[in-house]
Length: 200
Image 1 (cartoon, helix red, strand yellow):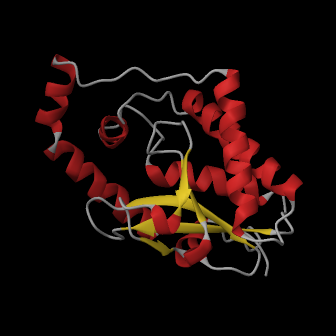
Image 2 (cartoon, helix red, strand yellow):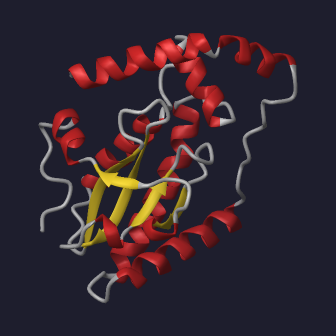
């Protein structure tokens, strides 16, 4: 767990460095209200993600694609309440590293999604833990999904942190904001008691 402890200490240092900025957040209009999607918007989102997953490979089962889409989107909404989320995401991160909030950093979202979806034991889908700017101050972690036997190069990013619990998803190759890399080492460290996220 040395990696996690070191990361949290570094994040705490950054947060205290950003404390004056936090005061500006509170004194101005920088805090944004959390948006709550309607049932119709959620169903449309599930349909879009299902279709994107199916398009990855002909071997992906439609029922599994739909189940993963629905599960990931609904769990992301549940985690908003569990984390007692505030927006924007960077402000929530600051509150965590100041000790005011407990969870809701990018890797909390990624690990909770992975732990939940791993229980589904999908036969045609493979789950990946991915990161960008690894070990940098703006390191970001998320979940990626590919067809079984495929790598992250042909996958879809599932990022619940980016839009404050409204699951963001995009083809990895189309995500211009981050350069993603596989984080096989991290899930082995954090989840040593679990089976491989998805067996080839």
